[in-house]
Length: 360
Image (cartoon, rainbow, N blue to C red; front, side, top):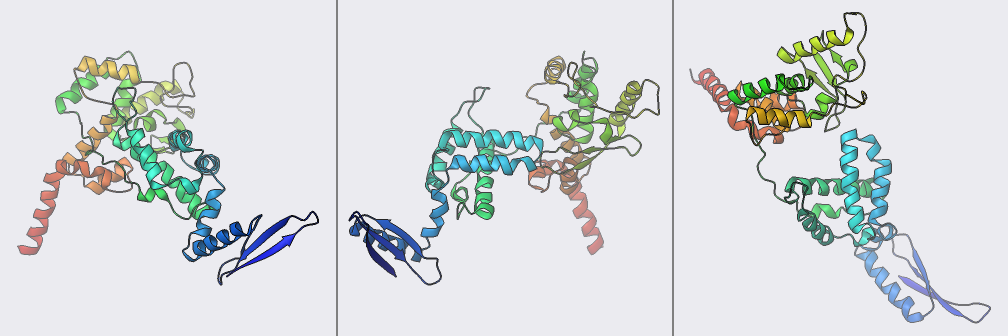
């Protein structure tokens, strides 16, 4: 129940101090210069407490979305991988620029949906609109920030992103090199002026690793005897061991011999593919790769499609979806289901063996 205490100071000014007490909840107090305001506040506060609304909005009215982004970038992002940090900082920065001055209590699903649609209409440098996948990543970044604010900071009682739909994404792209295209591309890469292009492309095709994972390889993480390379910076933040075999392994051995200059006992240090001017930065293969594609007569193909090609070859050579996911470093099978149609022969043989075992 609410009690209102009338107070008069030495100057004769009158104020009304309200205290709301409900069993099971901390008492709430406020002071007003008019009795009518005191009564209205007492009534609304009692109703809000009974309906579970009052304490939910207290902290949310103290902090803006900009405050949330700043604290998240300062306290949470440093614990993520380098690639995640840069992308999510940019994504959260966009939300801060758009609605950063809004109190968290005023950040509703409707407001987020409004700016989700605004984001989807932004033109990219390629001339198209922001893709559904990109919009989804912006929403995911903000959603995690709200989850942390809810679970760890006590700034909000619920995550408004849970009530906002993500744009429907098209089916995953599966563009892989045919046998003829692969031979033409490898020939063009071998003839490239860049001595790094051919071995990097061969590694991409033979391991399925991402471009940044290959170009970011450091010699200290490559074990040629065990035929593995350790990837410390991956997209999902997990450390992953990359098996090395075939031409990719042989090319790395040759490069290691050249680097040592005949001194077999000298340990190798630095990047496997260092830049020409700055040896501490990976080489930029964008122009050499595009030139090789043109010379090979290959269209509608990007570097990331080398990863799709590796996954497709695995599927066509009998690898299961779980095996492909493990090679590519995916935590779930969702991302590799796009290759399911390529492993139909393998699936059929598994079913055939099962039938032979139980019926014959």
